[in-house]
Image 1: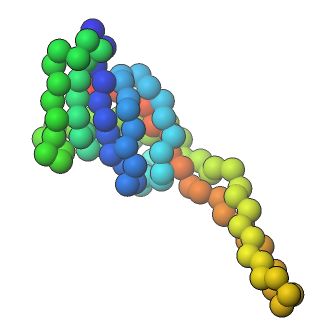
Image 2 (image 1 turned 120 degrees about the horizontal axis):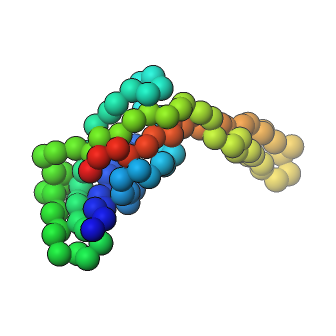
Length: 103
């Protein structure tokens, strides 16, 4: 029986199970540091045991930070017709790769 959880990090929600590796918005911490992430819901693959938070559950999902990295560069361009206005900027998000150790 595989347990799944819905976690919340950086204003986004992710569906995870144990030993999953996911890339999320940057979290403070060093590599190999253990962290706890808020859990919104928990269930198994047969959907017999379902726990829903109101809005979060008391216990947390345990995870380990694998690395701090940067995402792909995004090109942001502004343009106004007929006034010779052009502006181009770049943005590179800071991300964290984590591994879910225990739900």
